[in-house]
Image (cartoon, rainbow, N blue to C red):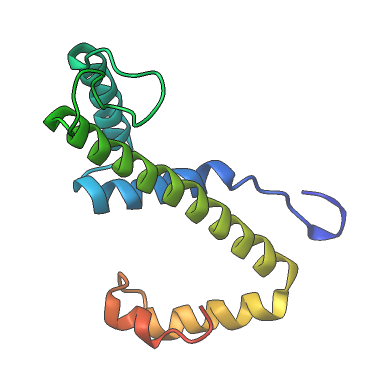
Length: 137
């Protein structure tokens, strides 16, 4: 603890893990580590089954083909899933970190939010109805 009762707490890793876990559960019905494992396996599988493609143009489009192959469509879907996961992961983690930093910088708001959480949740696990009642958060 520093002078004046101020304590520095690193929350970046916790925010990244939390947002990754939430997105993994939403996308795959599993945890963050399972989501990472799925992407690693998809990359390995893609490497094994992919054919030579044009170096310019649309990724996944065969040099001899004039239409999309099922491999190209599958790759398109996999890439979009990765984009959703990674974009959501970073954005959510950074947003949550900023919210915590702003609350730490404004003790009055921190107290108001804490009081609201105690009042609405009453020690229970939050559900969507409870979250709808939150006005400060």
